[in-house]
Image 1 (tube, helix red, strand yellow):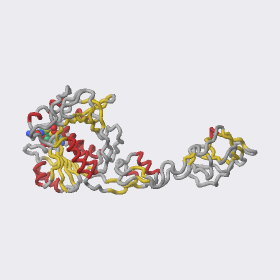
Image 2 (spheres, rainbow, N blue to C red):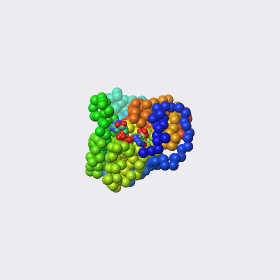
Image 3 (cartoon, helix red, strand yellow):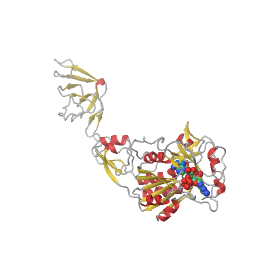
Length: 447
Ligand SMILES: Nc1nc2c(c(=O)[nH]1)N[C@H]1C(S)=C(S)[C@@H](COP(=O)(O)OP(=O)(O)OC[C@H]3O[C@@H](n4cnc5c(N)ncnc54)[C@H](O)[C@@H]3O)O[C@H]1N2
Ligand code: MOO
């Protein structure tokens, strides 16, 4: 499928570190595939081109989803002038006569306005009476009891003295300090984090309009795959079914099915043409071997190939096809790390668009060790973060998952490689992103 000369070095590159080769970055004549960045951009554009389905869900079901509409304040926040401290509401200059029987508590209704020269006990979060000049926190005031009540707050009244200068408005949170009704609090495309849920509740929401998660069907190809037990007799364990389901959910997808279709071209055709999913992800069968059915099936199904091979290692046979105007297929190569490369290169940007998510800011880290480059292609290399640097991991061959399983991300190594200290883009894994929200049990768009 690709030129054998450069393919020959691929496994070796994946296993060793060492000095960069700094060979020419331009594609040789006949070199196949779309440049890596361009392929990602095509996938992202395809995802953004589909109008997402939206629905309203109770707050409790919105975690991890993406806002389909801006979050607009349904109320002023605070919605009334609020005491920020436990203490005294006072009006006018002191000392103040303590009004008895009128402690103002959070959640209670309005109490009469305060005339000048009067103080009343108030609790944090309570509505400040009309005409209040300031709140004096208890530790900054001295109450002198009146006759018949030594506490000063009882029916006997008494007088209140400030221990410090009183500044008008002190310790009062004025109505609308955080927002006014109708203010835009968050734009559509915001991922609903626990903090967003809190803000939405405070701003008066019971439900949120969210983008429906894109429905994804995974088709695992290959007659050689076992679903349990130890590999034997040339059969191996399916490593991709168990990995892709939760990974896709962490990327904001609803995985409607993971189906094993073997090396049966007809079954694959039926599955691809009959799917109700927004995205079909296939694993294996992307190359040109005798049972590599993905290309012929896509041709038979009249699919449009948007990306047919990418200048990326591992994973160069990855592909992206449009099945119908609103349905896509990402073909992941069968080698497990190559499949992950395809997942992050094509499926992730596509899903982001389908899920209505914004792309995250690219994240760069300086690489501790030199990384051997591929002569012409971008390499994705598992790395772990150590003391602010990205450390490339071993066991990163296309068929291996040992390096990936210990990794925090995949470093994007340009053709020619990287020297120690070079800054490389790092693709975060959805469960390790330093600035992302946690992955909830039901999935969500958290990267
Ligand atoms: N003549 C050529 N042969 C190959 C080329 C090439 O350019 N020319 N590219 C190689 C590269 S690179 C890759 S990657 C693979 C991609 O092949 P396929 O997508 O067709 O994948 P398969 O042949 O089905 O499988 C490859 C490999 O991965 C194993 N596999 C498949 N599915 C799973 C799974 N679910 N879990 C674990 N392992 C899986 C499969 O047994 C094979 O060992 O093609 C190369 N060949
Ligand atoms: O080596 Mo292949 O690049 O995609 O696994």
